[in-house]
Length: 281
Image 1: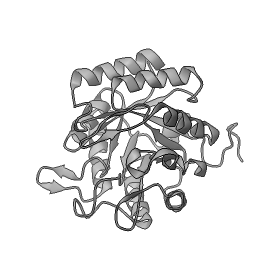
Image 2: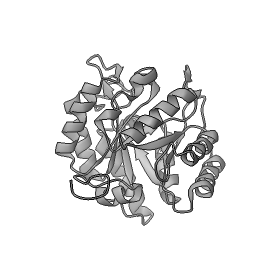
Image 3: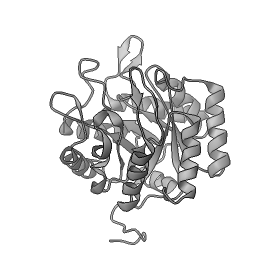
Image 4: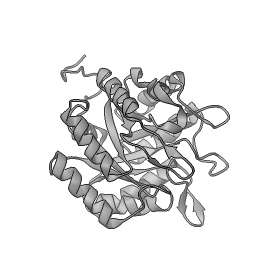
């Protein structure tokens, strides 16, 4: 599975003109990435001045556009802390996206602490259960994988947790192969040998983490949120260009790229139009 993180909270058009800011730009960019092979879209929304937002109305318009132009694609909303504070971070979960990111612990970011206090983590997890939204556990540290296990055992997470390793954020977990391998070992030990997992690398580390994850049997995240360049000398012309690069890595490693139907099966998600019992609604 290839996840495309289309916008994020930080990159602006000054960093790369291809960063999609408006809802219409986001839908167009995602559609191109979907056709290139992405089956999951990780989405943030922005204000008109490019600052991050948690506005549920913007998320609603984005979800409507994605469902129309990228039918079947897995829609994952961000509940990250740059876009708001407290319960505003989960205000869009009632829209019932397929998935949402869930950071289960705090850690350092380049210039601040990324705060995820236990009461907020518990509330976000409860909202995801309430609205049948599958969380993607964003693991910035080994303890976050262990916390996901604790939450799953308590019934706070439905099904097998889907864990994404985030590496290369300044002041958080660096890109370290031994740590990466131990993350995989830990996921398999806690959740089973077949438990799906993903990896994301920040900046120039995006390509390295794509290569590591795909070769090791995992899934990959790419996109302009994490990295605005193809290489040192060239900006990425689109999200789709970064997806196509990941597809090439899959092809070199004999890893067929999942269709949206296969991705939903891997993650245990309903097909469009099905109810909670898996029957046609």
